[in-house]
Image 1: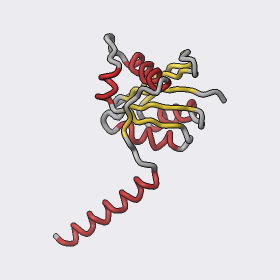
Image 2: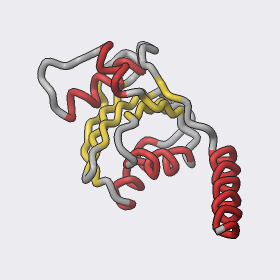
Image 3: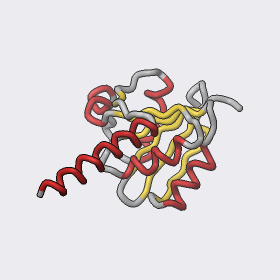
Length: 140
């Protein structure tokens, strides 16, 4: 399997993906629903260890998407939107161009990414939050 670089622009109702090969040639572009069916479509289409995926951290829509893509053992990058905008701002603004720019910046290792802990760390943090919530309720 050949390496792929994917930029994903996610919105409330849908997302747009741009897939580039190692030389920057666009090999696929598609739009998907921001629901379980759409997310599974992306997971099935992109999965694999040689797939590098950049997802912008806008709103909360990316979290479920991230969890699903993590199952494929893809190389995931959580992109900091404001810092990325400073690097590459499109004069023409549309979803396809944003996804294309994310893939291009990922391929060139020029993205500013945010830390997002692995699943086991997130699960442990959730357990601590739940425990703190239960203790807090028992004191009230």
